[in-house]
Image (cartoon, rainbow, N blue to C red; front, top):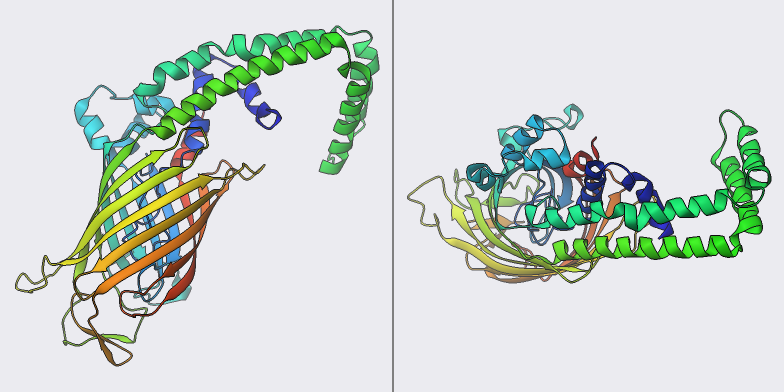
Length: 445
């Protein structure tokens, strides 16, 4: 309860402001969104695609390659055009969602999000010039459509519950808090014995006090209060009433957050991947002047959380990849490259003060290559490669948030039974950084 004390001060405001604070907090705790590249993209750090995309805009810089022979460095921009327009027209987190909420066309279009990825190392003329998005380093694009998704805390399904919590805040928190304050300030000699010496120490601090100096004053104030008033029966009774009523409010909030997390989520995702082999100069096509075909991928994403506000969440992916050949006469055009199934368990960890709540993920994927991986025979270090077969991949990932900023740092370790070109075991460490603008937008005034 003490760790969540700062939220009470924010909540004891006007009803609409309070609801916005609640919704913003719920937004920051979401685990179902993926700002980065899809699981089938080159350079991704995610073995499993999550069900939701950022409502406004997401950005990711990732270094990875989960089943590929070589790692890739990928920048991904992900966004929603309809929701961006709504945010420009109504600049508040809650107001932008409610805008055109009853328009079926807007609602259907708002379920569609897009992403585009670039290989930061492929076909770069000079590293000193920095990265410039262009056709040569374009590595893929994706589109995601939400078939069934009520994870947004602003969804009308949850509006009545949020309104109930907001309406009962005075009874559950502010009234017993006011009674506690009255009990303390009416104690004998409160002004002379505690308030005056405490404010005196605060006034004696230098103009630019250090954190250590402030901590000393606060500790003295707490020790003095405990010695003078904490054991008074009236104070203890008021504290018990406040604590009990606050726990009621916290349970209502946690129950609603748990209900939101437990709702199932169904999305379908299409990814176009451009095969770039510039980072592995030992891979050579056996047929001259033949371009490696692009890849198309469709993935069905099913996601559901367990009961509880901070309970684990399970995500399942099923999909397949086929070849896109620029030549309609190419016999590989439209052929299936692979089929796969993936499963991931996300476990929220204990919240760390001034950092946030990290998430530990465990995932596995089975991938069956039914055709040569690059769409044609290639040579790797002089040896012809056209292997098919099965690939098993296992990943452990820790996502570390940067407190209330929308930034997360995913660090993962991946084991693969083989890669797409080399029939050997492979162990890698991958790292990235992702940004979700929704988190900052939910805090905007």
